[in-house]
Length: 145
Image (tube, rainbow, N blue to C red; front, side, top):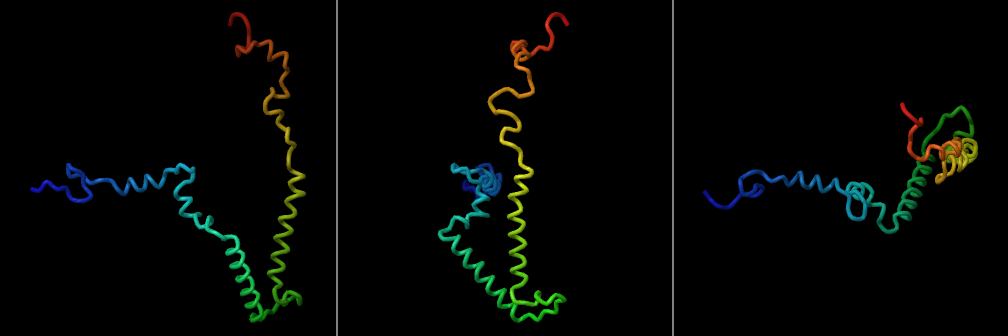
C-alpha cells in the first residue's frame, strides 16, 4: 500500500465533497450583498454602454421587421390595415394607452398617505384615556379574577 491518497479522497479514503462545497458557495451572498446566481443571470447588465447597445439592437430589429412588412402581401378586410407598419403603430398606441391609463387609475384607487394613521403615534380609533388607565400592565380587569 502507498501512503499517498488518491485525488478526491481525504486521508482516510473517503470521498471529499468538493461538488457540494461549490454548490454551497454558489448559494451564499457575497460581501456586496449580491447573490452569485444574480451575477450569472444579470451580470451582463453591468457592461459598459449596455443601454446604447440594447437601443441599437432594438432599432435594427424594428427596421428589419418593417422591411419584412413590405414583402408580406396582406388580405385584410379593413383597407388601412394593409398599410406598411400598421401593426407596429397599432401596438405602440395600444401600449401607450395602457401605460397612460395607469395614472388616472392610480389616482382613483390609491389611498391617502395617512390612511392607516401616523406611524409613530397610537391608532386613531383608541381612546387615549383608556390606554393611560391601564398603566401599561396589559391586564383587562383589576381585582380578583
